[in-house]
Image (tube, rainbow, N blue to C red):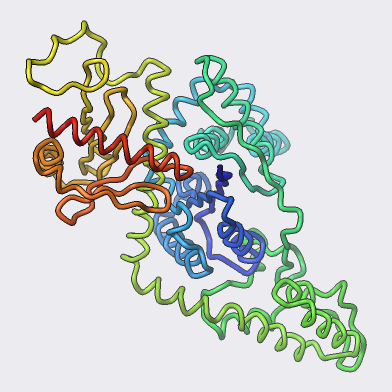
Length: 456
């Protein structure tokens, strides 16, 4: 059983060295561990709370997706998607809103800080406070609970939000008498490096002291490093490595031997200009190959879009059944309960308990059409790809019901089965966790297709 780890990526601003060392690099490394089922999403709904500049939001989403991919994130190993591509998340946010106590949200740090600031200024307590800021913890809970994430790596300032997500999940489980949500655990990376910025303070967009990771290219990286504030010690005078921003940044990129050599050079009196050049060359050695991949991706935004859409399909294959389960739990079932239908006509093949597999069609927020295939017992077996119009989706269902189903091919993928018909991808099963689950999914889907073809 792999541990599902979920990380949200802020989609405002341009990624800098501090983001890479403190978040991107360790997250990419964690995604390569075989025991980790990694989910990485761009939190563009959250970004709307901080920014009302559409161009900035759009540009930042593209830059950040390209940055993570260039830094080594493998979309085939992880689930990488945009928050706004998962309509189940805002729906779940409303479900959770209806069980979340207002008093809990009143205690959220961000909201309390805004209220305290207004009070100190003699203004109304809620002046300038949007409902988005107030509801931020519920949206974050939905991000996590939609996928039953086990662990959520966050900074210390976000611990409260994970605790609130646990409280909200427990409340829902209690009200509706079921174990609908896994209670997420917070993960604090104590060893994550925090880089100083140009002025010696923590590198942060808030301080305007960042060193961009890719923006501006090699020249801008060097120019930025040359602007790092140092003391007035001259060449030949010993420098204190432990108080030097240059050494702190260098150590985040260097091997132990390289760091030791730079440490000694500072003690021996290397000039600050020369030290900055050494730092630039060491960082450039790591950044240059990534920058090349980044530039290639940015020149082909359609490739990034395809990766994110595929990630959304993988994510929705999990979130969709979860929302269906929750709808059933809270009484929002599809359709109205009616008396039992008449028995099927003689000669028709029946599933278990006289029922048959069924299709359920629906329309996406973007106007496309999809369908799900459910077993006789109501288990979701397949989520289709998107179709441009309902007729195309219906034609595909008709093929799967008829003799054409015999031409269907099931391709085994790392996390799910892909159904192909006439050489074209049709849809995928929910994710499975191991070989036994895979074999079970394979058997149930084949059985359902057999029942449908006999029915016709």
